[in-house]
Image (cartoon, rainbow, N blue to C red):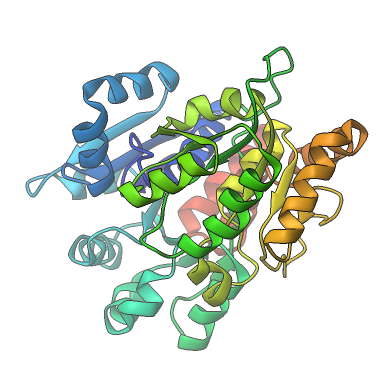
Length: 376
């Protein structure tokens, strides 16, 4: 089948974690014999920032790392209808311009036989654009939301014919343990500053514990203001700026432990939804300690796959335990890796996607799936 993904960006992961998941899903689809293309605006915020900060070498790094992924930038004169005419499944990300999303919807309404899916990995539409969202989704076959809390919002609003939870996951072709990498420091944190949404949390769960234990450590991510860099330095942590997601597994392997510190709006407004960094850290086989968040959907085994810390003092204690007890660290690595490989890879999500399409896709897609299954 032919999949078309409208995304904010495939090529840039600068402050854009959805690119991680999309790349993994597309790689899995291609490995199974399907075709997939990602369309992204010529002036996407993430890609513009990546180019301004890192230059063309960053795009070349993407092409080198993912040579089989197909993407196309679009401008005002892009022939969307021609692309849609050949599509079996069209997935529209929530950052897509509403006017374009409605144009795609109109194409479907006026005779398109593709299955039309709206994919939400944030909460912007239901939170900030309710009137636009209700009108926009009238002709969509499915809404895929990245957590049950968000799915429930859609259901309460009555949007979409079907609203289904479709979690993010780790691209296990990329994220896996690298056993022979030499450790260079104790602690690594990979994440962006977050517009003040977790300033206090980063101090409490990262900088203060690192300083208290005298840890060596690395911080990677973007949009850190000067005062944050000063605070990191005082805590003994080295700031390395942006890191391409393809390089993250090796960075994890060079450190002994990592932490998950979610943004406050996710904890308060979207309980139960982890960031993709949880999946990726566990897939890379690095011990993980989480600041407070509620695994309300039972995605993991808290206490086995990772450790929880309810406050900064507890984070300090948990870090000390993991760094001093190799048996505990090894048990966390093994358990987290087992959970990812059994439940939370991009291959699992593609399996789920095909199950969803078999139930809720258009007749054309259901017939295509049935024919493929019969041939296999």
